[in-house]
Image: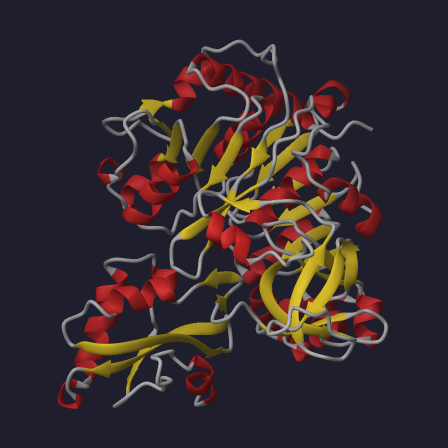
Length: 511
């Protein structure tokens, strides 16, 4: 079976490719084929060729998939941008990725002045969903005038996702382009075959996606299920009871989550939880953040042995998976590699460590990648033997199961979203009342972790609740809110070495 929606448009044109749960809007494979071809034709007419780049900032809706598949069929790099980012962050990503076209959703104009984006002159601006704002062209209207045939040089495009860098600026993860017609090349990655072989997915599957599509996992997984000819159910915003309703309503067979969603569903009243029929669920997969062992135990008790887990990154350099049966025997593990081989390395010596010893987790033999425009960052994650790391720390047991004991140096994971504190620290230190600052993750029952700022004020006399609130508001005015501290503590001095290195470990231990 060829893995691309264009093939399912020929064999099952009336079958829903996806359903937007909140509105009930259904888009068939036949419709998706027409609109994605028209979008690819427009991109060609605008002068974009294979290997060029577009960036989109669209919420979970039909237009997100239309633009994704249009870029895919035109052989372009496609960068989705989080709808929670602020103007400076958006401008940086659009310019850094070299986007020749930027497509924004009209719904964003309620909270952002999109005309204040500092985009390169040559970058064409478009808007979907509603009347185009001044300076933006109407994407939907222009697409509608295009022919519905594939472009003459149709080939698979690639995603270029951005993940936050420890320096605060997001890093584009760029993989080499292997051209090929739809269903070939490296546009699909390993995801469709992984769904088939690991999770028994196929054309008869119904996949529930409860997370924002601009994150790599929801985007890759939704595309994988459309490549298989399944139906994808998309939530515009996660709600714990609504998710259970949708599983029952659409007889959902496969789904992908982050642990904070499990926590929120488990906190529903027992009576609410028990009223939904979840018997159709064959596979609920989670990743993106550590799942507390008790949470996963409770979920398996409730949903049965259908809860799978994996560990990987947008870099695609390797992947481990663990089935529910294996997890019950190896609680807390993220599994064994299915892609790339594992190496646990002593960072001081660069030598590989035996099982049971804690070191940096490297993968060998997986996909090649680079951090776009940052050769130093690209070099920093490579071992002399060619292995690469996401910066996580852990160990393997005698049977080869991986356990993560720490995460990328100081990264905070809140509700499955990776937050690097450096950017927040760089901002807070500019506040005129702040002498020193450290931003750390502290436990949060719902989200796993939340952001806290520990501030050394210029004068302890100024260390008041009013100043704490002022610092929080200062952050919220300048950064996306997910990166902002939810609380501020004061101290007389932060723990630093004589060379000035901040000892965050010491600080975190206090909390």
